[in-house]
Image (cartoon, rainbow, N blue to C red):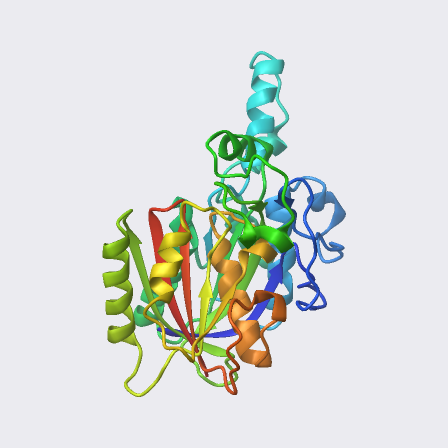
Length: 347
């Protein structure tokens, strides 16, 4: 579909500016917060008006802007981006009885605040869009980039996915049972048998185009599926592999979006059941936590694995040894009904 070149990720782990994924950062209170960086590239007068999601998005994009003279558009997937500022603004309306309100929280309160701020700071007047589709927000951004590159094959696009832990959404997810009631450490996430996971946040940005020169990987296929039926999922996964995996090629790594929620483990186990015995299986949500665009982190770490030919040991679910990591399949599941498959290959 397209090639992925430079990438940047700001996550709860040591991912930017230095990267050390062999060391696992432990969470507190069932929340994995992104490790914010020094925002030296953002003017202080602008920085102090930014919400966290916008800060993360700009900080992750600035290094990529410097590498490309030609940028034809900005495509962002997010679900909760700007939510914290939205709640602040709504509280102001109540507190001041719809009187004189501070405009900053309003300006930063919408999901498209990230993409618009990136366009403003980079002086980019090209295509600028934000996809907000719950657990498919980043997947729809991927699909959008792929379609644009069919129509405009010489273009370069900044593609990203990000979300923040807002107090409002965390409380809603907790009350709905999507966050564990008991306190759990992320290094023990997969051993539990209870409902819920741990909350996460982060941003991953990618420069994508149709040029294979210098690319780290090739993004080859994407499929999204709405279902709560395990059999339909398995059929869809088999079809995805048969349609997109070239003949005589195999999956070297299956990257699973398991999140420790006992209700959804069956979906991941079902997908793993058809894998070759020589296929390595790994998990990533003990590093990122669960959030609606966690698949962006999965895509970033897949690029890291392909580029470095190294899987951090704490990610591995089985003991299969791989000489060359050429094909990675990512399977992510959001709240048991939004499923996505991605196929990524070494360039």
